[in-house]
Image (cartoon, rainbow, N blue to C red; front, side, top):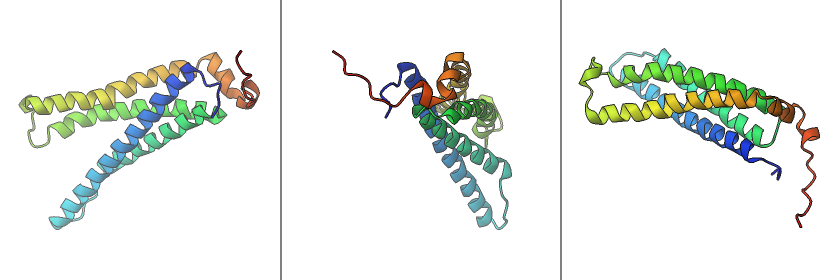
Length: 172
């Protein structure tokens, strides 16, 4: 590991890795839901692929893999990691917008009215919205501001010349 990793780099990379992992888990959960729905359709005697839900789950899974890869690449100060982080931030906003539209649809299945949702379900809906809509959207904005700054452009332009891998001198 590089000993010259700054606190600012760590403060940007750790949420990127965490959100990437969270998006992977969300994508796997949505994918399992898609397969469960296909299984129920088969059990009822017809085969139907829920294309919208399957596409959404694969998109979320891809965004998670990109975020995890970008975070690990930023830890190693790879030049491609900065661009991948910008792509991850943009796709994270797309994910947040899609999740924002999917949440009321999922919450009202079987009720057909948002006002009929009980207190427990409403609290789950608020927590889901905070985790999958609010935090990713805010982090994307912070990621765009930080990664597009001139200091980060220089730091990731050619990582081997800016940060040589020579060990730090001993502190006296």
